[in-house]
Image (tube, rainbow, N blue to C red; front, side, top):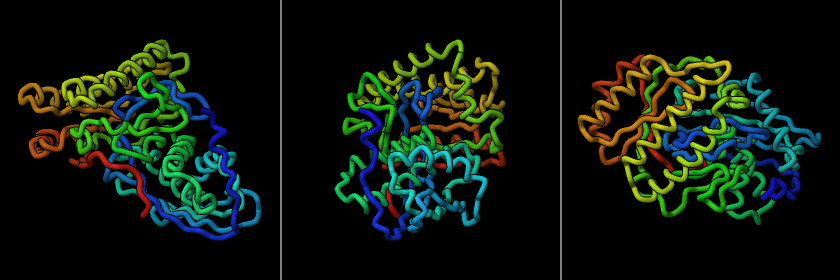
Length: 357
């Protein structure tokens, strides 16, 4: 399958259109770290789609007649020209696939349900929401588009803005990247896990402990680039593929012990790549490590299936089944909140994907 299938034959009808979409963030369980242009992953990944942590984006499409993409971007009510370079790059990448967009001027208004720098991937939800608005406009110009094709192309476009955004269109669990388990797996867009996902994982909980809300010393984009010539890169890509195969089987069977082992291995492997790159860097903080140690001790003492994962930062995502959430939340409040910046943490859970609002 090639990118050419996503080139639209839709033609502008010269009419204005407005649409609004809500897209969730996601938390990767199998981590993608390392990519090639244009936003293609060096290894497959798998993620939980979140429920409450969303970006809501409204786009007004106004006919311009200028044959070039024009836009204004507002974030939480304020005009934000500093976002223009990233959006310009995005539009340059996608205009081949949606040539009709050059006939319009766009007014884009976006807001998050979660605070900035809170350990939640806002670029994933933001690019997914914007791409869904664009696809909604395309469907008015090309009504024959099926739901499956709509979602695939939305994921494809979102990926060109932010790799992990490919996984923020559908839910509750999505995979992105070619792999040996899914025949339909693709580097170009993400696909749903499928009907054989164990019900245990459909309402899994994610509590995000806000250890450090400051800007990261090294951006994810820089981190991905450091995988080129990394001494352990090839071994890491093999590890991720093997862990994905194991985790898919585990998430069909409902094996919580296996789930926790793979998820925590992946989190620590991600940070091991950061600590062994050139230049090397550490994004975990002392409180990150203290939380991990306390989670391990709690799990050993109680046999309660609580585990952690980490994104490219210091904050900790705690994952656990819905049926034990009261016990886990008591543990968080009593024993972990003190290690969070200003005692802050966010409750979330697995969700069903993006929706029009």
